[in-house]
Length: 254
Ligand code: ADP
Ligand code: MG
Ligand code: MG
Image 1 (cartoon, helix red, strand yellow):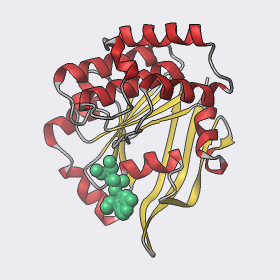
Image 2 (image 1 turned 180 degrees about the horizontal axis):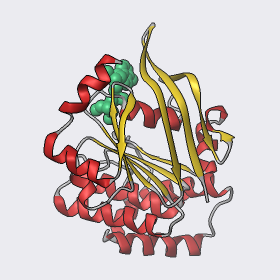
Image 3 (image 1 turned 45 degrees about the vertical axis):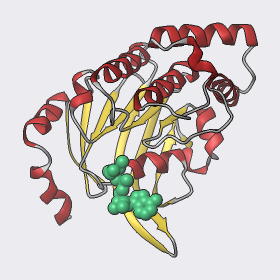
Image 4 (image 1 turned 90 degrees about the horizontal axis):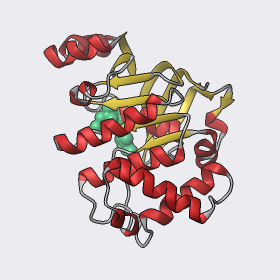
């Protein structure tokens, strides 16, 4: 049982000499087995929240706290955050030239587990995960993100999710650019991982489409760098009907 606790988080983004406040007091608690959706318009700071938790150097936490099972996440290095059980799937995954999927995953697993997985077991593990995801075995020999289609990038993320077994996964617009088949595969992967009851998921999205496949337990509407409304899955249905209009005023006036 794990808990990620975000308390009154304020974050500025470093842009050259300047620093611009983006997050303005975010409070959120995610526990094992729970799926939370953060939904908000473009530019509301959703990715900033994800990057801040991941420890991206461009983002400075000016106040507030992030705790994982009581441990201060913000005091951890990026590696320590991964080892502590945080997983972040980036909205814009980077290419890793010359590193195969297989080696990338083994390095990541070694970092997270604290020791290199035994090679024979590891090969089996990867093979099994790839079969479940419906990925061809040759995928393991491709270089990470090099010439990957949108769907392949997302499958690679889900492969990491299944093999690294994080405590809390933050998926930032994992649905963007996916056709319906890829969206289903990705959703099934997330649902498998959450089905264990051990994973807490923070699903960040602009569109409601993915929430038809991954039903969230909680929905948080994010506007102007903070949460302006919270509810259950029905809130996502309302957003699908009427968009963010009603919430924009709330975000702007405070
Ligand atoms: P969202 O993910 O909700 O679309 P972002 O977190 O990407 O929102 O962006 C929130 C605001 O912060 C935007 O105004 C954006 O321009 C600004 N911002 C985010 N990251 C950077 C960055 N690295 N450099 C400059 N501005 C940034
Ligand atoms: Mg955006
Ligand atoms: Mg974003």
